[in-house]
Amino acid sequence: MKRFLPLMLLLATLSGMPGAQAADLSKLRVGVEGAYPPFSTVGPDGKLQGFDIDIANALCTEMKARCTLVQQEFDGLVPSLQSRKFDLVVASMAITPERLKVVAFTDKYYNSANKLIAKTGSPIDGTPARFKGTRIGVQRTTINDRYVTAKFTEATIVRYASQDEVYLDLAAGRIDATMVDGIAGDIGFLKTPAGKGFGFVGPDYRDPEYFGAGAGIALRQGDTELRDRLNAAIKAIRANGTYQKLAAKYFNYDIFGQ
Image 1 (cartoon, one colour):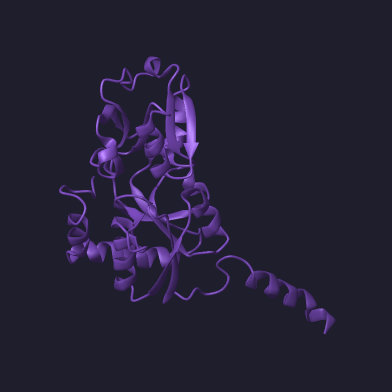
Image 2 (tube, helix red, strand yellow):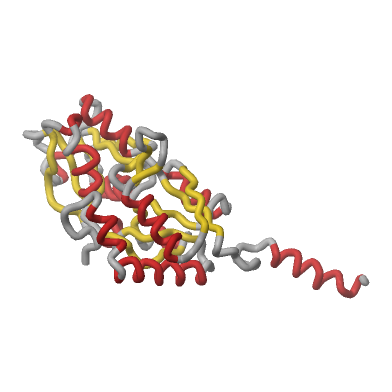
């Protein structure tokens, strides 16, 4: 039997490697955030809700897969995906060159600009000189965190586990501004009582090096069958009107973008 030992060891090793075993695509665990309205939040009844949640459920229905939503803070989503805590991530995650080094993505399922929010009348207007001595709040490990760290070098960057925590400190005056997805900032803060007296300042931020090409569904590199099925499902729900019906619950404009 000794002459078969190397082969047996090789097979045992391969069986433990990511992608070596055929995935059961009828049962999927979906990583979501739950603290990023209107895309993902926890409702008064304790249940997850929002556009990301609805999209995840619609795609699972289209693929005839039984899905379990697994809530996780945003900065833990990619590590948990890689450690197989779940099989895919639906959390408004931008498809960026940096992230493509460690995970794979589907086609986009929406695309929007990122923007700065500050107090009405604030001198902050998006130009670098205006950031000197200011405190900019961002959700950590996001594209906004990466961008302001690289570009707003005169400001102090304050990082938070969730965007909801950023809004609390912004409303309380503990920070001067935040950079966030424009849709999330508008609906999740500016249109709430806490957002009174605040507004968007400066330009739209769309630099593809930092902000990518829209939000996609993240999955492990090598999970090509799952990626292909998800891409087909995205196309299907857009073709049959499901996507538009879900989007209309939250937005009065086309969120899919260019």
